[in-house]
Length: 209
Image (cartoon, rainbow, N blue to C red; front, side, top):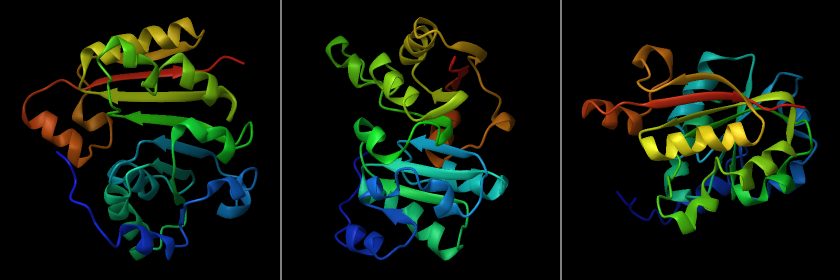
């Protein structure tokens, strides 16, 4: 469902010191921004931010960065970050195509891909966030042995993603074709699929040095 345009979303987020529209100025400085040496986890395509904000509240010893292009969606997350004064989460308005402009090598310790657009048509497969084209990008910003976790409701996209990871030489650590609701943070979007009794597909994989 298309989100209604929010005219004040961009001006509002520009006033929020936890949201960055030009994250390139933070490249190599993320640990300074958070003020500690805790691991940094990145969610790509954070939407309204339910996942990343819940994770940040559950794991205070981990720093979270949420990347999202859609300002209408992400303004919801930005409000929660500000209202709750969340110390260990930040947001980037930007495109995954530009990750190397936002992070130095070794700055990101884990990547989450939650219900990414599956791009079902073959000619669009290179747009998938699990495709080799993006794995190459991730490799340039992650620490040694970093992990990636993917959740989706789309079985074809899931199967293809597992193959992308294997072909990239990654170690598949866990595969679950019907993820238990108690094993993961459930977002509003995910809950809609579960109410329809749709299985949630999950894979965790580790990058090799």
